[in-house]
Image 1: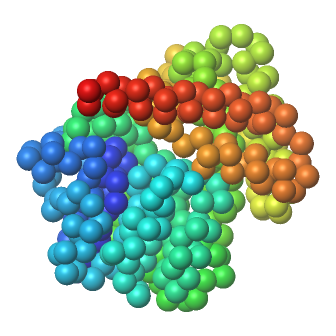
Image 2: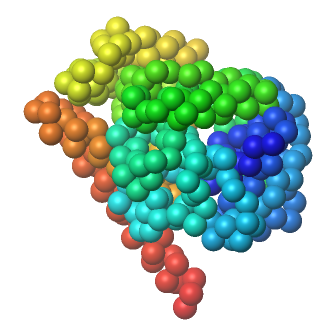
Length: 337
């Protein structure tokens, strides 16, 4: 039986807690903001794919508490938001629970997010994953996985970092996919995961920050003016240009157009969605500005790619992020006084 520690059991993390439990593994969930609710009541998930279910994993609050369980973890599955530059770093937070053969699994958004973990744990399998999962935590411990949208989308794309990793690292990737599939999910192995990450950044680097800044769903923004579509398309093409400068295969204008066409078709039907950054802004939570926008802009500069739209949107999104940080700090200070 595989031992799995899932770090960051929020909306996406909870779905994978359930998936791994259905695969007959031992799952321990590291919960933070929802710890008290999950510890007391477990998770409730409303879902078209899995039905309405209640499940109660083993729950801890920190990696140090997980380490006290004296378990050797086969997989540490990271589902928390990717926040480069935060303190303590993700690598330091998981240090108490990483064994010599533990596979570290990054189910996180963003681009160029693997290097810090790879440098801290060069001998461990590092599995980089792209996820498509329409799920939200509507209150602590209560998950809406596609129920309100009548969706069953469930895709996990998995590859080793780097793509030239040893065979036993690739074997761990195959084992992870087998467990996801056994638990009722979809998972696919890729020899090189980076084209899949860049394929997603075409959307995450455009519609995610634009909707957060405009406070519109993706459909509402695309329907708001002819210039809205032009803006999104321009940002998508800049993301493609950065990927091509890095020689990322398969990321081209045709791929960007397929993404834009799909979102425009949904917008015309009135089937808009709130991307994660917009939800975070509405809920006064930190959002992944550096992993998605900052890293893309930095890679553009390092490779001599002009990205004026990305530069502007990153600057605005970073300002919004910092304003949120100041607001939360003020609220915390007010609540403690």
